[in-house]
Length: 279
Image (tube, rainbow, N blue to C red; front, side, top):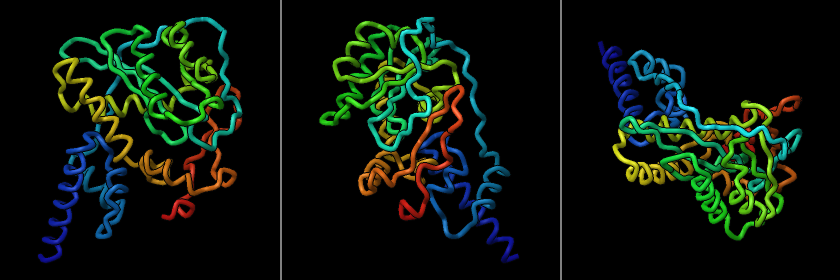
């Protein structure tokens, strides 16, 4: 009877732990919650099993709206084929997703540093005009103020927003290279982050207005950058990861390769080993 009571207490503690984390990270998976908490009183498999048995597994939402209206222009090629990445400000990736609020579709643009997974620029808009993407780019550049961006490549799909004169001028003014996908599989990093911000943070809030969307988008990006750990970053947050790699000589850092069609080198499971990052 004592063992049964102990098991019941542990089960309730696991449930409470998962629900407490989800008060902040609304749709964080059970495995990631375990890694975030790192409890020494229960193993990972048992923690996950209790969560599953109590119906705490999240269902993946489906996307239906189209946000990319591609151009057939071959003006910009994919510059990331076999390109090694071992530092921040080498490749930024951008994408647009939608969010439905009271039967109205609004749109979110994100720009992320692919090496650290840090969201640098973001914007919410009522339409798909290029001006919203320009606002996200301006914010990304301000975020990296004082940094040298002449070695940077901006990578996106072939959406018309990214070939607008205003957007290209902003890139050209900073000597930022322009790279575009050949297929939908060549920009998966930022597509995944778009999904996280939308499905794990914004949708569960039940946002009622466009103004509220802008406020909550800013808060969600802050949570993502400063509080949400990543397996691929040695379970660091993007902000902590950027601080950590400053202590690692650039020639000793793991190299990241992004998937491109015909590329034989793919992204590694983790950028850094736990030993290298002090775990």
